[in-house]
Every structure is written in structure tokens, then in C-alpha cells.
Image (cartoon, rainbow, N blue to C red; front, side, top):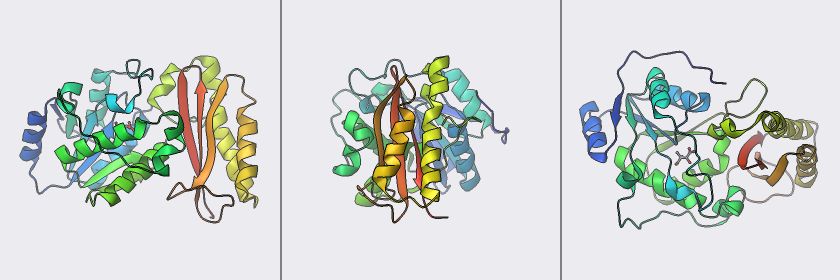
Amino acid sequence: MMRLLPNCSNKTMKIAKTIAELKSCLEDFGRDKTIGFVPTMGYLHDGHLALINEAQSQNDVTVVSIFVNPTQFAPGEDLDAYPRDFDRDSQLAEAAGTDLLFFPDPAEIYPTGASTFVEVEGDITKKLCGQSRPTHFKGVTTVINLLFNLIQPTRAYFGQKDAQQVAVIKKMIRDLHMSVEIIVCPIVREADGLALSSRNVFLNLAARDQALVLSQSLASAKALYGSGERSVKIIKAAIINQITTMPLAAIDYVDILDFETLADIETITSPALAAVAVRFGNTRLIDNIILIKR
Ligand code: PAF
């Protein structure tokens, strides 16, 4: 269920469909302005709107992109089925205070013959989502690079729900000496705990109900950690046991890793990321929680 954030804007939002239009709008804003950039694949929900709000509060200009990026989907994944509703998205983006919405066609971003990719190598892209989606992060880092090159943002905003994406993008920023600041915003959840995702729309009633096990199992992990448990094996087993009580849930992964580096750990001695990916039919959901001493 969409809860609209308060309309904090009476500005008129510009829409650019081509790179030429994007550049011309950015010139009009003035290159001395700070730019907050929120990259999205559309079908906006309150999680995206929270990122836009944050961008708006920290920058002179807020740019949002809506681009269902083909290079981050492998053949057979849900590229064609990915939910799209540009009219609704543009209204939501404008109401949230976006100054410029970039909505390019795939051919604008990847013209015929384009064959350059940006890839973060190593374990960081191979574990968690990288196991079942081995080409996914290469597509993400390629498009993010491309969008950063075009928009030259001061700050870019990402949700903690995509914790691995955040870690990979931060590593790319460090490795390539890019100057954009990455701002990570907390996971936005439905009242019952389900993390917001554009893919939630695919869940039928039974799957929607059982999908609560993601946030519930992570809450149990947090409680276990809070009670003093530090063994990754024990906390992981507790999460898996809880998820497998749901007949529709097929676990893709459950893991607990070092929060910063995503390195494997056996005992939690510094902030750790407990992350899960679970399929309900064709819909794959992810969620995570940070285990940290309070
Ligand atoms: O998180 C997403 O929606 C996408 O991976 C992103 C960052 C917009 C790149 O296509």
C-alpha cells in the first residue's frame, strides 16, 4: 500500500528523455549547484520517495532517473515483467520535489555498438545475490557509472535494502577515485514489516502473508544477537529454520557477513550484515538487518 510522503514541493518538474535534453536541463540549473541524484528503475514506492526527500533536503537540485536497466538482468529474469507505470511515477516524483526526471529509452543509454562495461571484481560481487545473479552487479555498476558521468551528482542516494549493491557501488567509487558522495537511507517497511520493493506487487495474498517471514526471521536474528549470541552458524541456522516453516518460501541465500567488506566471518565482533533472499514463486525478495552493538 502506497503511503504518500507529504507534498513538500510546488516546483514544476522537468522531464528529459534524451541525453541532450538532460544536459540542457542541467545547464539551465547551473553547474555551480549541488545535485542530489536518485537512480531508480521506477514503479516508485515510499522507499524511493524517502530517498528523493533526503536528496531534496541536502542539495540545490534533485535529479531522479527511471530506467529499467537491461544489463543488470540475465536472460530469463524479469526484465520484461518488471513493473512500469511512468505516469504514476512522474506524479509521485514531482510531488516529492524532484526537479528533473531522466527517463531514457534503452537505446539512448546503450546505443548500437556500445560494448564498454564497468565491473567490480572479487568476492564482493560473487557472494549473496552474485551467486544466483552472476552478471547482475556488472550491469548495475555499468549503468551507475554511465548515469554519474551524465549527471555529475554531488551526492547519490541508495536504499539499505540493497545492501550489497551499496557495498559494490562504494567500492567502485573508491577504486575509481570518483568524487560523488554515497548516501545510504534506511529500509522503508510496510506497517507489518515487509520491506518495500517494486516487486511486492507480484505477490499473491498467500505469498504476501508468508513473505513476512523475511523481516520476522531477521528480527529473531537481532534478538538472538541482542541476547549475546555471536556465532554466525547459530544465528544463520535460526533464520533458515524460521524461513523454512513457510511452505511457499524457497531460500536463495541466508548469510551473515562483515558489514563493510562483506567478508565471511564465523563470529560477530564488529558490525555484521544479516542478509536473506527468498523466492515466492517467480518473485525473489531480499531483506537485511545490521547486527551492531548498541
Ligand atoms: O536499485 C535499483 O533500482 C537499480 O539497481 C539501480 C541502482 C537504479 C541501477 O539500475
